[in-house]
Image (cartoon, rainbow, N blue to C red; front, side, top):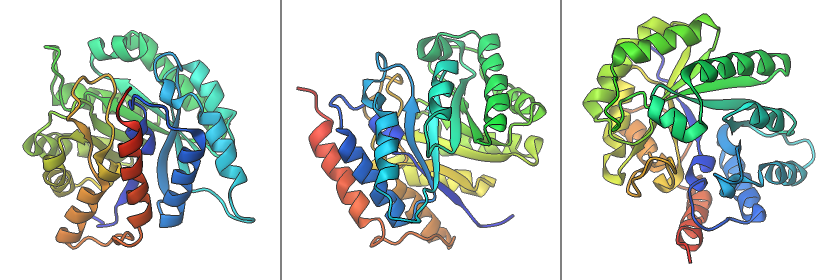
Amino acid sequence: MTDTVKLIECPRDAWQGLPEIIPAGIKVNYLRELVAAGFQHIDAVSFVSPKHVKQMSDSEEVMARLLDSLPDGATLPEIIGIVVNEKGLERALATPGVSTIGYPYSISAYFRRANANMTRAESRTLVETLMRETKQADKDLVIYISMAFGNPYEEPWGPEIVQDTLDWLKDIRITTVSLADTVGTATPDLIHSLYSQVKDHVAGVELGVHLHSRPDAGEEKINAAYAAGCRRFDSALTGLGGCPFAGDDLVGNIPTESVLAALTKLGVPHDFSSTKIAKPLALTNDIRAQYTHAE
């Protein structure tokens, strides 16, 4: 198996639950610095109800200003825009610069209702619509399996449920899937076990992980996923963010620094030195200081 890894930087997931609104200009400058640092895959915006995620209500403005700020001849890397319904899909497809649509498909009925107010059948129908519409628009699509590593809602869960979902996604020709530990409770052993059990059932599908974690456990979880064969990792600088509906303020994204540290110790090549990420890392700490505390 190749040692080449794909890193997806996730400022959208870092920002979406913050209590104080980050001005569009700050977001644009931050995204520009990520591009300048060499990030080739950025989960940057979402097209969801401003009523529920007010922080991301300016996604069209952010993308327009980001494109306008590019030097002549420059192009954006892969920009992922998250949607949760057809209205969001319409907005995302109409927004220049968004090259990939992302959708969180929950295998938890409770979380699906809380996050998107959908039944399983409605959610599956939406995934099929996303597949059809993104293909027609020449966009890519990534499906996140929310609650892939279990949940705290006392619902049925097991690798067979994840495997069934992956089989269905492969059958409808989804080619990129990320297993999400939405509430950050998966242990390294569980991460390794689940990924190992399901990966061979989806040959031809790029299977990644979108893990949430308490700060001190991130590197160990990345090691577990890598050892199981994962080569696609979502993360966010400093571990800022996480799911705003998950209910634990101490659980955030896996810090990008933890991913890079793990890869370095494993001897896996990557393109990010501490110097290259220094400026966006400093900006992340500025955002932490200014926008993470409600008045």
